[in-house]
Image 1: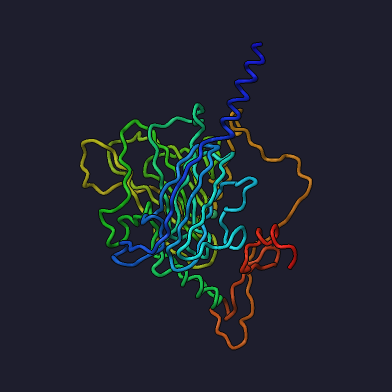
Image 2: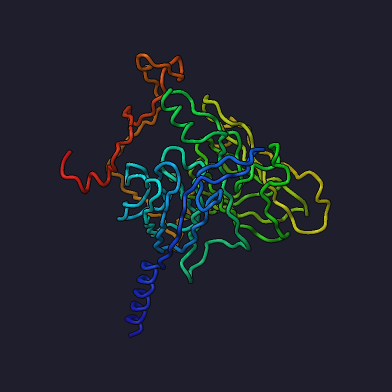
Length: 404
Ligand SMILES: [Cu+2]
């Protein structure tokens, strides 16, 4: 009887976990004026008037419906980055791959099926470079009655973004037409704030107020398009405990390196003298391509009585081109692989696939001027095959069109 009851209880628990809650969100995409770097009335495409956009907060196993209304001037889609969308690819977001863009002045109900993900992920537009300003966090909490595999007192979300001086659709369209390098970003921002290393941004750096002795979970999301970034907080060690919606073996380090699209969950304990300490994102550049070598700074600020007007302490981060420090960080990352959070990577390899990613040069078409290397056009490829988006969704065509 005891065994039978035990089985019944376990089965019920599993059933509850698999079901999860159903949550609803409304996203309205619209051109909205934003104040940034001395400019006060430039409009950019954002969601619900927010940059970064609104947070989705759910539990593992929940199902989320997001009604996306596009009031912008061109079609967009929203992608749920890192959500596996197991057996439900229909509203995953990549434009012309799983769905067509949502046209101007219309809505589409997108479904997000959370299954194995737990930790921090993010959502972003998946049309051209619209993701530069259309993005926000997805926070996935442990199922009720289960715990984080680590302890903390408070949590904060940190979204690092790249800011461009012009409309990002114009930038990418011009680069594609000319075959040259797209414009560089002009600033990096932490939660929409470039911080005090830029003019016009004094006094508006992103601040985390901390209490001595407490431990903070920082959910870091790199929503940028191009540059990898080093991150550190002056005089504080970081413990990386999660990445891309999965737990890691705790890794204690002085700095981390995060790539565009990645998310990292990091613990930091306020265990230093009362004061103000810079948290800095600084680019890591491993190619000869031009890059924005600015940094962005926020402040990790202790509560209490001390001289608040003293300049905050700066962290020592690896230099822009320091490949070995970048590699030394990445090579230490390991999945948690505990009893509660097993690693389910297949161990029996039956087939090897080699994929070569390259940026090639194509000859400039006749009667055209190209601005790529030696007057050519840049052209990216996988195994020397390039891709240009069709005008219908590949997934829908595959399932719903008989021929052609
Ligand atoms: Cu993505």
